[in-house]
Length: 441
Ligand code: FNR
Image (cartoon, rainbow, N blue to C red; front, side, top):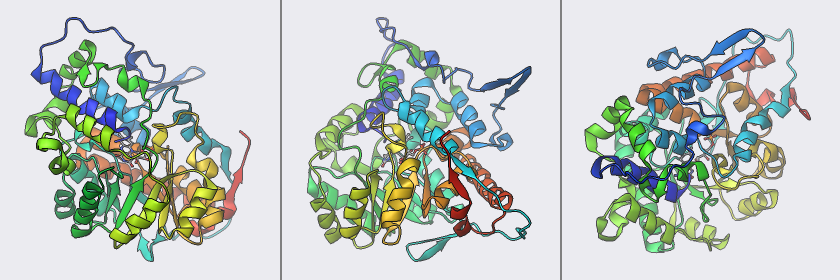
Protein backbone atom coordinates (compact mmCIF):
# COMPACT_ATOMS: atom_id res chain seq x y z
CA UNK A 1 0.00 0.00 0.00
CA UNK A 2 1.85 3.04 -1.12
CA UNK A 3 -0.97 5.08 0.24
CA UNK A 4 -3.45 3.41 2.50
CA UNK A 5 -6.35 5.46 1.24
CA UNK A 6 -5.58 4.84 -2.40
CA UNK A 7 -5.20 1.18 -1.69
CA UNK A 8 -8.70 0.95 -0.34
CA UNK A 9 -10.06 3.09 -3.11
CA UNK A 10 -8.59 0.72 -5.62
CA UNK A 11 -10.21 -2.31 -4.02
CA UNK A 12 -13.53 -0.59 -3.60
CA UNK A 13 -13.44 0.70 -7.14
CA UNK A 14 -12.87 -2.83 -8.27
CA UNK A 15 -15.88 -4.01 -6.30
CA UNK A 16 -18.07 -1.18 -7.58
CA UNK A 17 -17.61 -2.30 -11.17
CA UNK A 18 -19.59 -5.41 -10.49
CA UNK A 19 -21.95 -4.42 -7.74
CA UNK A 20 -23.30 -1.10 -8.98
CA UNK A 21 -24.90 0.11 -12.17
CA UNK A 22 -22.75 2.20 -14.42
CA UNK A 23 -22.86 5.82 -13.30
CA UNK A 24 -24.37 7.91 -16.04
CA UNK A 25 -23.31 11.16 -14.37
CA UNK A 26 -19.63 10.50 -14.09
CA UNK A 27 -17.31 13.45 -14.07
CA UNK A 28 -15.05 13.62 -17.03
CA UNK A 29 -11.64 13.83 -15.44
CA UNK A 30 -8.37 13.33 -17.23
CA UNK A 31 -7.36 9.70 -16.96
CA UNK A 32 -3.89 8.31 -17.33
CA UNK A 33 -4.49 8.05 -21.05
CA UNK A 34 -3.69 11.73 -21.16
CA UNK A 35 -0.46 11.40 -19.25
CA UNK A 36 2.44 11.89 -21.58
CA UNK A 37 4.26 8.87 -20.17
CA UNK A 38 1.30 6.48 -20.17
CA UNK A 39 0.10 5.62 -23.64
CA UNK A 40 -2.77 3.10 -23.56
CA UNK A 41 -1.10 0.44 -25.63
CA UNK A 42 1.92 0.41 -23.39
CA UNK A 43 4.54 -0.65 -25.90
CA UNK A 44 6.80 2.37 -25.86
CA UNK A 45 8.35 3.32 -29.10
CA UNK A 46 11.69 4.95 -29.26
CA UNK A 47 12.69 6.94 -32.27
CA UNK A 48 16.34 7.39 -33.04
CA UNK A 49 16.72 8.89 -36.47
CA UNK A 50 14.72 6.72 -38.81
CA UNK A 51 14.86 3.62 -36.60
CA UNK A 52 11.70 2.86 -34.68
CA UNK A 53 11.97 0.55 -31.70
CA UNK A 54 9.13 -1.09 -29.84
CA UNK A 55 8.97 -3.31 -26.80
CA UNK A 56 7.20 -6.59 -27.20
CA UNK A 57 3.98 -6.29 -25.19
CA UNK A 58 2.32 -9.58 -26.07
CA UNK A 59 1.04 -12.24 -23.70
CA UNK A 60 4.07 -14.46 -23.31
CA UNK A 61 6.04 -12.93 -20.45
CA UNK A 62 8.96 -15.26 -21.24
CA UNK A 63 9.65 -13.15 -24.28
CA UNK A 64 10.44 -10.14 -22.08
CA UNK A 65 14.14 -9.36 -22.24
CA UNK A 66 14.07 -6.50 -19.74
CA UNK A 67 12.05 -5.28 -16.78
CA UNK A 68 10.83 -2.43 -18.98
CA UNK A 69 9.40 -5.00 -21.36
CA UNK A 70 7.61 -6.80 -18.51
CA UNK A 71 6.25 -3.39 -17.61
CA UNK A 72 4.81 -2.99 -21.11
CA UNK A 73 3.13 -6.39 -20.78
CA UNK A 74 1.80 -5.58 -17.31
CA UNK A 75 0.40 -2.28 -18.45
CA UNK A 76 -1.42 -3.95 -21.28
CA UNK A 77 -2.92 -6.60 -19.01
CA UNK A 78 -4.10 -4.35 -16.15
CA UNK A 79 -7.15 -2.12 -16.18
CA UNK A 80 -6.29 1.57 -16.08
CA UNK A 81 -7.10 2.18 -12.42
CA UNK A 82 -4.96 -0.75 -11.25
CA UNK A 83 -2.20 0.30 -13.63
CA UNK A 84 -2.29 3.75 -12.13
CA UNK A 85 -2.10 2.36 -8.60
CA UNK A 86 0.98 0.37 -9.62
CA UNK A 87 2.75 3.03 -11.63
CA UNK A 88 1.81 6.37 -10.15
CA UNK A 89 3.82 8.73 -8.01
CA UNK A 90 2.80 11.70 -5.91
CA UNK A 91 1.65 15.03 -7.38
CA UNK A 92 3.75 16.09 -10.42
CA UNK A 93 5.83 12.90 -10.27
CA UNK A 94 9.07 14.87 -10.19
CA UNK A 95 10.51 12.39 -7.71
CA UNK A 96 9.24 9.43 -9.73
CA UNK A 97 11.36 10.61 -12.66
CA UNK A 98 14.24 11.54 -10.37
CA UNK A 99 14.35 8.02 -8.93
CA UNK A 100 15.23 6.75 -12.41
CA UNK A 101 17.37 9.65 -13.60
CA UNK A 102 19.60 9.56 -10.53
CA UNK A 103 21.20 6.34 -11.79
CA UNK A 104 22.44 8.14 -14.89
CA UNK A 105 24.63 10.37 -12.75
CA UNK A 106 26.64 7.39 -11.56
CA UNK A 107 29.06 6.00 -14.15
CA UNK A 108 31.26 2.90 -14.35
CA UNK A 109 34.97 2.76 -14.96
CA UNK A 110 35.72 -0.83 -15.90
CA UNK A 111 38.99 -2.68 -15.41
CA UNK A 112 40.47 -4.51 -18.32
CA UNK A 113 42.46 -7.74 -18.60
CA UNK A 114 41.16 -9.22 -15.37
CA UNK A 115 40.00 -12.82 -15.12
CA UNK A 116 36.20 -12.62 -14.74
CA UNK A 117 35.39 -16.21 -15.60
CA UNK A 118 33.94 -16.85 -12.10
CA UNK A 119 31.65 -14.23 -10.62
CA UNK A 120 30.06 -14.17 -7.18
CA UNK A 121 26.76 -12.30 -6.76
CA UNK A 122 26.28 -13.10 -3.07
CA UNK A 123 26.16 -10.64 -0.17
CA UNK A 124 26.22 -10.87 3.63
CA UNK A 125 23.06 -9.69 5.35
CA UNK A 126 22.40 -10.08 9.08
CA UNK A 127 25.31 -12.47 9.44
CA UNK A 128 24.09 -14.83 6.71
CA UNK A 129 24.69 -15.16 3.01
CA UNK A 130 22.16 -14.22 0.33
CA UNK A 131 22.77 -15.46 -3.22
CA UNK A 132 21.78 -12.07 -4.64
CA UNK A 133 21.80 -8.50 -3.23
CA UNK A 134 18.00 -8.37 -3.61
CA UNK A 135 14.78 -8.59 -1.60
CA UNK A 136 11.16 -8.02 -2.62
CA UNK A 137 9.78 -4.80 -1.10
CA UNK A 138 6.45 -4.70 0.72
CA UNK A 139 3.53 -3.73 -1.50
CA UNK A 140 -0.08 -3.68 -0.36
CA UNK A 141 -2.97 -5.04 -2.43
CA UNK A 142 -0.72 -7.33 -4.46
CA UNK A 143 -3.78 -9.53 -5.03
CA UNK A 144 -4.89 -6.89 -7.54
CA UNK A 145 -2.02 -7.68 -9.88
CA UNK A 146 -2.44 -11.45 -9.93
CA UNK A 147 -4.41 -14.12 -8.09
CA UNK A 148 -2.95 -14.56 -4.56
CA UNK A 149 -0.26 -12.09 -5.53
CA UNK A 150 1.62 -12.10 -2.21
CA UNK A 151 2.04 -15.85 -2.29
CA UNK A 152 3.26 -15.69 -5.89
CA UNK A 153 5.84 -13.03 -4.96
CA UNK A 154 6.93 -14.92 -1.85
CA UNK A 155 7.39 -18.14 -3.84
CA UNK A 156 9.37 -16.31 -6.50
CA UNK A 157 11.61 -14.83 -3.80
CA UNK A 158 12.01 -18.27 -2.18
CA UNK A 159 13.04 -19.79 -5.51
CA UNK A 160 15.89 -17.27 -5.67
CA UNK A 161 16.77 -17.55 -1.97
CA UNK A 162 16.02 -13.88 -1.24
CA UNK A 163 13.69 -12.32 1.38
CA UNK A 164 10.09 -11.44 0.66
CA UNK A 165 8.71 -8.57 2.74
CA UNK A 166 4.97 -8.78 3.21
CA UNK A 167 2.90 -5.62 3.66
CA UNK A 168 0.66 -5.08 6.69
CA UNK A 169 -2.12 -4.36 4.21
CA UNK A 170 -1.62 -7.39 2.05
CA UNK A 171 -4.54 -9.28 0.61
CA UNK A 172 -3.41 -12.57 2.18
CA UNK A 173 -2.81 -13.37 5.82
CA UNK A 174 0.84 -13.45 6.81
CA UNK A 175 0.33 -17.01 8.11
CA UNK A 176 -0.92 -18.11 4.68
CA UNK A 177 2.23 -16.75 3.05
CA UNK A 178 4.50 -18.24 5.72
CA UNK A 179 2.99 -21.70 5.22
CA UNK A 180 2.64 -21.51 1.45
CA UNK A 181 5.99 -20.09 0.42
CA UNK A 182 8.51 -21.47 2.89
CA UNK A 183 11.23 -18.96 2.06
CA UNK A 184 12.75 -16.05 3.92
CA UNK A 185 9.76 -14.10 5.15
CA UNK A 186 9.96 -10.59 6.58
CA UNK A 187 6.97 -8.57 7.76
CA UNK A 188 6.34 -4.87 7.16
CA UNK A 189 4.54 -2.95 9.90
CA UNK A 190 2.51 0.23 10.07
CA UNK A 191 2.39 1.64 13.58
CA UNK A 192 -1.31 1.87 14.41
CA UNK A 193 -2.66 4.15 17.15
CA UNK A 194 -4.26 1.16 18.79
CA UNK A 195 -1.07 -0.35 20.13
CA UNK A 196 -2.92 -3.53 21.10
CA UNK A 197 -3.61 -4.13 17.39
CA UNK A 198 -0.02 -3.24 16.47
CA UNK A 199 1.20 -5.65 19.12
CA UNK A 200 -1.09 -8.40 17.86
CA UNK A 201 0.31 -8.05 14.31
CA UNK A 202 3.85 -8.18 15.69
CA UNK A 203 3.00 -11.28 17.73
CA UNK A 204 1.52 -12.99 14.67
CA UNK A 205 4.65 -12.19 12.64
CA UNK A 206 6.83 -13.64 15.41
CA UNK A 207 4.62 -16.74 15.63
CA UNK A 208 4.79 -17.26 11.86
CA UNK A 209 8.58 -17.24 11.96
CA UNK A 210 9.19 -13.93 10.18
CA UNK A 211 12.92 -13.18 10.32
CA UNK A 212 12.66 -9.40 10.38
CA UNK A 213 10.13 -6.67 11.10
CA UNK A 214 10.23 -3.65 8.80
CA UNK A 215 8.60 -0.53 10.27
CA UNK A 216 7.54 1.89 7.54
CA UNK A 217 7.81 5.46 8.80
CA UNK A 218 7.15 7.59 5.70
CA UNK A 219 3.38 7.12 5.43
CA UNK A 220 2.17 8.57 8.74
CA UNK A 221 0.70 11.32 6.54
CA UNK A 222 -0.69 10.01 3.28
CA UNK A 223 0.90 11.09 0.02
CA UNK A 224 -1.13 12.79 -2.67
CA UNK A 225 -1.41 10.63 -5.75
CA UNK A 226 -3.59 12.77 -7.94
CA UNK A 227 -3.54 10.59 -11.04
CA UNK A 228 -4.83 7.74 -8.94
CA UNK A 229 -7.60 9.91 -7.52
CA UNK A 230 -8.72 10.97 -10.99
CA UNK A 231 -10.09 7.49 -11.58
CA UNK A 232 -12.71 8.08 -8.88
CA UNK A 233 -15.62 10.45 -8.58
CA UNK A 234 -15.36 9.98 -4.81
CA UNK A 235 -13.39 7.58 -2.64
CA UNK A 236 -14.29 4.06 -3.69
CA UNK A 237 -16.42 5.04 -6.67
CA UNK A 238 -14.78 4.63 -10.04
CA UNK A 239 -15.65 7.00 -12.83
CA UNK A 240 -17.46 5.56 -15.83
CA UNK A 241 -14.50 5.35 -18.20
CA UNK A 242 -12.47 3.47 -15.58
CA UNK A 243 -15.34 1.02 -15.04
CA UNK A 244 -15.69 0.38 -18.75
CA UNK A 245 -11.96 -0.04 -19.02
CA UNK A 246 -12.14 -2.93 -16.52
CA UNK A 247 -14.54 -4.73 -18.82
CA UNK A 248 -12.00 -4.34 -21.61
CA UNK A 249 -9.51 -6.46 -19.62
CA UNK A 250 -11.09 -9.94 -19.47
CA UNK A 251 -7.77 -11.73 -18.87
CA UNK A 252 -7.27 -9.72 -15.68
CA UNK A 253 -10.90 -10.24 -14.63
CA UNK A 254 -10.56 -13.97 -15.16
CA UNK A 255 -7.35 -14.24 -13.14
CA UNK A 256 -8.00 -11.78 -10.32
CA UNK A 257 -11.75 -11.58 -9.92
CA UNK A 258 -13.23 -14.89 -10.93
CA UNK A 259 -11.43 -17.18 -8.40
CA UNK A 260 -12.37 -15.37 -5.17
CA UNK A 261 -14.04 -12.09 -6.01
CA UNK A 262 -12.65 -8.79 -4.83
CA UNK A 263 -9.33 -9.20 -2.96
CA UNK A 264 -9.79 -7.98 0.61
CA UNK A 265 -7.30 -6.85 3.23
CA UNK A 266 -7.23 -10.31 4.72
CA UNK A 267 -4.15 -9.73 6.82
CA UNK A 268 -5.91 -7.21 9.07
CA UNK A 269 -9.44 -8.51 8.69
CA UNK A 270 -9.67 -9.59 12.33
CA UNK A 271 -8.98 -6.03 13.53
CA UNK A 272 -11.58 -4.27 11.42
CA UNK A 273 -14.69 -3.10 13.24
CA UNK A 274 -17.29 -5.85 12.90
CA UNK A 275 -14.71 -7.73 10.77
CA UNK A 276 -16.18 -5.76 7.90
CA UNK A 277 -13.59 -5.79 5.15
CA UNK A 278 -15.44 -3.44 2.84
CA UNK A 279 -12.52 -1.42 1.39
CA UNK A 280 -14.14 1.97 2.04
CA UNK A 281 -14.59 1.04 5.71
CA UNK A 282 -11.09 -0.41 5.80
CA UNK A 283 -9.77 2.87 4.44
CA UNK A 284 -11.60 4.81 7.13
CA UNK A 285 -10.16 2.47 9.76
CA UNK A 286 -6.60 2.83 8.51
CA UNK A 287 -6.80 6.59 8.04
CA UNK A 288 -8.04 6.88 11.59
CA UNK A 289 -5.49 4.37 12.90
CA UNK A 290 -2.28 5.55 11.20
CA UNK A 291 -0.28 7.22 13.94
CA UNK A 292 1.37 10.51 12.89
CA UNK A 293 2.81 11.03 16.36
CA UNK A 294 5.40 8.25 16.28
CA UNK A 295 8.95 9.18 17.21
CA UNK A 296 12.22 7.48 18.10
CA UNK A 297 10.76 6.46 21.48
CA UNK A 298 8.44 4.05 19.69
CA UNK A 299 11.49 2.23 18.33
CA UNK A 300 12.43 1.27 21.88
CA UNK A 301 8.90 -0.04 22.44
CA UNK A 302 9.01 -2.09 19.24
CA UNK A 303 12.36 -3.53 20.23
CA UNK A 304 10.86 -4.59 23.54
CA UNK A 305 8.09 -6.61 21.86
CA UNK A 306 9.87 -7.91 18.74
CA UNK A 307 12.47 -10.65 19.26
CA UNK A 308 14.30 -10.63 15.92
CA UNK A 309 15.81 -8.18 13.42
CA UNK A 310 14.24 -4.71 13.33
CA UNK A 311 14.44 -2.55 10.20
CA UNK A 312 13.15 1.00 9.69
CA UNK A 313 11.99 1.88 6.15
CA UNK A 314 11.74 5.43 4.86
CA UNK A 315 15.05 7.01 5.88
CA UNK A 316 16.61 9.81 3.77
CA UNK A 317 18.45 11.88 6.36
CA UNK A 318 21.94 11.05 7.64
CA UNK A 319 21.20 12.19 11.20
CA UNK A 320 18.08 10.02 11.30
CA UNK A 321 20.21 7.09 10.17
CA UNK A 322 22.70 7.77 12.97
CA UNK A 323 19.95 8.05 15.58
CA UNK A 324 18.48 4.76 14.39
CA UNK A 325 21.87 3.11 14.66
CA UNK A 326 22.17 4.55 18.19
CA UNK A 327 18.67 3.22 18.96
CA UNK A 328 19.92 -0.26 18.09
CA UNK A 329 17.93 -1.06 14.97
CA UNK A 330 19.45 -3.76 12.79
CA UNK A 331 18.76 -2.19 9.42
CA UNK A 332 17.34 0.77 7.56
CA UNK A 333 15.79 1.15 4.13
CA UNK A 334 16.86 4.33 2.39
CA UNK A 335 13.62 5.02 0.57
CA UNK A 336 11.15 7.64 -0.62
CA UNK A 337 8.41 5.01 -0.89
CA UNK A 338 8.81 4.64 -4.64
CA UNK A 339 8.09 8.39 -5.07
CA UNK A 340 4.53 7.86 -3.85
CA UNK A 341 4.69 10.13 -0.83
CA UNK A 342 6.56 13.48 -0.88
CA UNK A 343 7.00 14.83 -4.38
CA UNK A 344 10.22 16.82 -4.71
CA UNK A 345 12.01 14.42 -2.40
CA UNK A 346 15.60 13.42 -3.13
CA UNK A 347 16.17 10.07 -4.70
CA UNK A 348 17.47 7.37 -2.30
CA UNK A 349 20.48 6.73 -4.54
CA UNK A 350 21.55 10.38 -4.10
CA UNK A 351 21.71 10.20 -0.31
CA UNK A 352 22.86 6.59 -0.08
CA UNK A 353 26.64 7.27 -0.08
CA UNK A 354 26.50 9.66 2.87
CA UNK A 355 24.17 7.39 4.85
CA UNK A 356 26.23 4.29 4.11
CA UNK A 357 29.37 6.08 5.16
CA UNK A 358 27.77 7.23 8.42
CA UNK A 359 26.15 3.95 9.53
CA UNK A 360 27.10 1.21 7.07
CA UNK A 361 29.46 -0.42 9.54
CA UNK A 362 26.84 -0.48 12.30
CA UNK A 363 23.70 -1.72 10.56
CA UNK A 364 22.41 -3.19 7.31
CA UNK A 365 21.81 -0.41 4.78
CA UNK A 366 19.09 -1.28 2.28
CA UNK A 367 17.82 0.95 -0.51
CA UNK A 368 14.87 1.05 -2.89
CA UNK A 369 13.30 3.26 -5.53
CA UNK A 370 13.50 2.98 -9.30
CA UNK A 371 15.59 -0.20 -9.58
CA UNK A 372 14.93 -1.67 -13.03
CA UNK A 373 18.36 -2.84 -14.18
CA UNK A 374 21.21 -4.98 -12.96
CA UNK A 375 23.46 -1.96 -13.48
CA UNK A 376 21.24 0.01 -11.02
CA UNK A 377 21.75 -2.71 -8.41
CA UNK A 378 25.52 -2.84 -8.92
CA UNK A 379 25.72 0.96 -8.62
CA UNK A 380 23.77 0.91 -5.34
CA UNK A 381 25.98 -1.80 -3.86
CA UNK A 382 29.04 0.15 -4.99
CA UNK A 383 27.64 3.24 -3.26
CA UNK A 384 27.36 1.34 0.01
CA UNK A 385 24.05 -0.58 0.02
CA UNK A 386 24.06 -4.09 1.45
CA UNK A 387 20.71 -4.96 -0.11
CA UNK A 388 18.37 -3.57 -2.78
CA UNK A 389 14.59 -3.84 -2.44
CA UNK A 390 12.48 -4.31 -5.57
CA UNK A 391 9.03 -2.74 -5.69
CA UNK A 392 7.55 -2.27 -9.13
CA UNK A 393 10.14 -4.42 -10.95
CA UNK A 394 8.78 -7.68 -9.55
CA UNK A 395 5.20 -6.36 -9.61
CA UNK A 396 5.53 -5.93 -13.38
CA UNK A 397 6.56 -9.57 -13.59
CA UNK A 398 3.69 -10.57 -11.29
CA UNK A 399 1.13 -8.65 -13.35
CA UNK A 400 2.53 -9.97 -16.63
CA UNK A 401 2.74 -13.64 -15.62
CA UNK A 402 1.90 -14.39 -11.96
CA UNK A 403 4.48 -16.34 -9.95
CA UNK A 404 6.42 -17.37 -13.06
CA UNK A 405 6.40 -13.78 -14.28
CA UNK A 406 7.84 -12.57 -10.95
CA UNK A 407 10.52 -15.27 -11.24
CA UNK A 408 11.24 -14.10 -14.76
CA UNK A 409 11.78 -10.55 -13.46
CA UNK A 410 14.26 -11.87 -10.90
CA UNK A 411 16.10 -13.95 -13.46
CA UNK A 412 16.42 -10.94 -15.78
CA UNK A 413 17.97 -8.94 -12.93
CA UNK A 414 20.25 -11.79 -11.84
CA UNK A 415 21.56 -12.15 -15.36
CA UNK A 416 22.07 -8.40 -15.70
CA UNK A 417 23.94 -8.15 -12.38
CA UNK A 418 26.16 -11.05 -13.39
CA UNK A 419 26.87 -9.55 -16.80
CA UNK A 420 27.58 -6.15 -15.26
CA UNK A 421 30.25 -7.62 -12.97
CA UNK A 422 31.91 -9.30 -15.92
CA UNK A 423 31.86 -6.16 -18.06
CA UNK A 424 33.15 -4.15 -15.13
CA UNK A 425 36.15 -6.45 -14.83
CA UNK A 426 35.38 -7.59 -11.28
CA UNK A 427 34.37 -10.93 -9.80
CA UNK A 428 32.43 -9.86 -6.70
CA UNK A 429 30.10 -7.10 -5.58
CA UNK A 430 32.57 -5.96 -2.92
CA UNK A 431 34.89 -4.71 -5.68
CA UNK A 432 32.32 -2.37 -7.25
CA UNK A 433 32.80 0.67 -5.01
CA UNK A 434 36.14 1.41 -6.60
CA UNK A 435 34.65 1.24 -10.08
CA UNK A 436 32.15 4.12 -9.78
CA UNK A 437 32.31 7.82 -10.56
CA UNK A 438 29.59 10.36 -9.74
CA UNK A 439 29.02 12.63 -12.74
CA UNK A 440 27.05 15.86 -13.10
CA UNK A 441 24.89 14.60 -15.96
C1 FNR B 1 4.39 0.26 -2.31
N1 FNR B 1 5.22 0.51 -1.22
C2 FNR B 1 4.85 0.11 0.05
N2 FNR B 1 5.71 0.24 1.11
C3 FNR B 1 5.37 -0.18 2.34
O1 FNR B 1 6.18 -0.05 3.27
N3 FNR B 1 4.15 -0.76 2.57
C4 FNR B 1 3.24 -0.93 1.57
O2 FNR B 1 2.15 -1.45 1.78
C5 FNR B 1 3.58 -0.45 0.25
N4 FNR B 1 2.70 -0.58 -0.78
C6 FNR B 1 3.11 -0.29 -2.08
C7 FNR B 1 2.26 -0.58 -3.16
C8 FNR B 1 2.71 -0.37 -4.45
C9 FNR B 1 1.82 -0.71 -5.61
C10 FNR B 1 4.00 0.15 -4.68
C11 FNR B 1 4.52 0.37 -6.09
C12 FNR B 1 4.82 0.47 -3.62
C13 FNR B 1 6.59 1.04 -1.45
C14 FNR B 1 7.56 -0.09 -1.74
O3 FNR B 1 7.80 -0.86 -0.59
C15 FNR B 1 8.94 0.45 -2.20
O4 FNR B 1 9.42 1.39 -1.27
C16 FNR B 1 8.86 1.11 -3.59
O5 FNR B 1 7.98 0.40 -4.43
C17 FNR B 1 10.25 1.14 -4.23
O6 FNR B 1 10.23 1.80 -5.45
P1 FNR B 1 10.10 1.05 -6.87
O7 FNR B 1 11.06 -0.11 -6.85
O8 FNR B 1 8.67 0.61 -6.99
O9 FNR B 1 10.45 2.11 -7.85
